[in-house]
Image 1 (cartoon, rainbow, N blue to C red):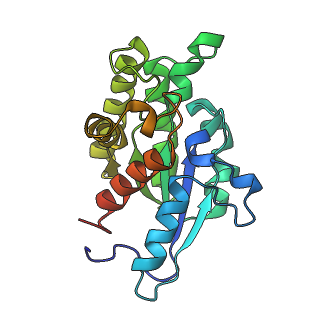
Image 2 (cartoon, one colour):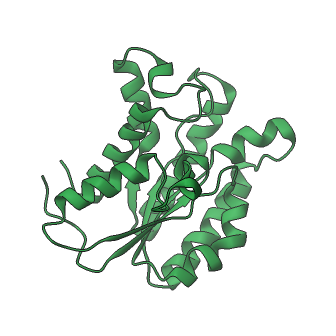
Image 3 (tube, one colour):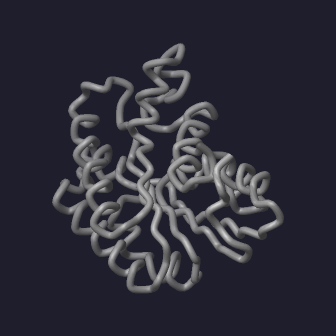
Length: 209
């Protein structure tokens, strides 16, 4: 266990698409059943008495542009001390229904979000999108690597915590029983897949080594 990186009273907001949402509206605690829930439990076990508030505002189907459009209401107005952002698979995947967002558009949207967040004095945790198909060589996954690289570049430029969930997922898939074990449909993680994302997040922020 590393030194706990958050302090009493901190509020951590999670933002993104269905991978973050994960049924949070049906959950009486508003957290859902995915990686955010795992992180919440791990933080509760590791806080050493600190009270950390977790909020989830992921929205299934969202692309980076939807985050731009709702950023004031669903981030800035909530006054979190930290925000964790994981978005991008729908920017790529929704190309099949004419709603894709190019890499240039994704970078522009992410820069807009990041700069508004930094200006508000909110700590940033940037998480890469993971996968868009079970085949790592699929053109969508090749494209996803470009979006993940953009997230890493923003983390370096703005001094944000960088969570390479994409690398962690493919490493787990390579060592695991099957792609489907972690990614039943190639996009949405299983419980095991969500655990991989949560572990990468907890390691990146310094809760675990």
